[in-house]
Length: 319
Image (cartoon, rainbow, N blue to C red; front, side):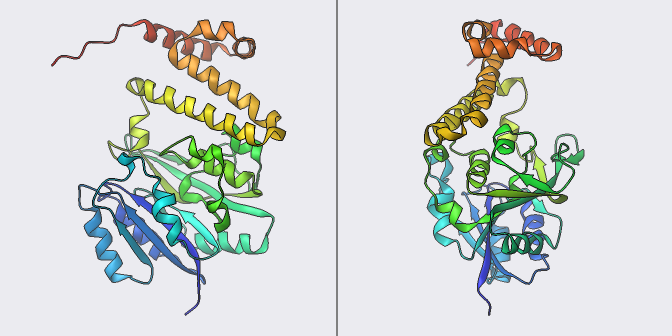
């Protein structure tokens, strides 16, 4: 039997409605490379673990389950570092969470073939289908990039032209074991710093084909469900502040990329002020003031709305 070339890791929590389709999408891969799938379940309270066990028993050479009896995320444990990385095999790592799934049965071959023949690339990614579970509508995850191209650090940090979903990612194994201070700034939300990590290690090739599906707001406990809508504003503020902290750590470590990172830090600080409805802080800061002067009318209306919301007294909790 040939050696394992790729490890896919799949993180699950209360995904009983989706995990079968996810696992089937891995098993349907038509590939010349041997791979395994580490499925980590963080003590789901539904039937997710039962379904994982079923597949692990049926496909023991592919499905490798790690089933927790106590929720590790709530304890502040880094699940990937603690449980996934010690079990990685092969030259490459791919990711897909338990409520998303792959579409293209040649996805593994397409990505590994590319990385095998392009040593100066740290990773390759592709477009995905954005499936809004609230509305039932589907659209491309990234509508800004329609051609195959290279993604550079500035694209990833910018967060527009370099946008890709975690279900699309395949990268070289060695990258996952690197230690950087900026990687520890966003507990529980590692996609953004991981993309930056890949970008500082080499070029990233982007394929425009939609080879996976991202289910947006698939469960009430998903990150996206908790961070959309007016009630999520405190969470969104905290998230933006964490991003600023992460980028500042990156800049401290790599001052040579200041021209790329500094404008994004300023933009995210501006976003925090907008979410807080805090015009005072914008006017006190020269860089934020300059950014506000360049803001279009539509955005200024949004800012005004947040200022109004910030002044509305919070309703007292009724016991």
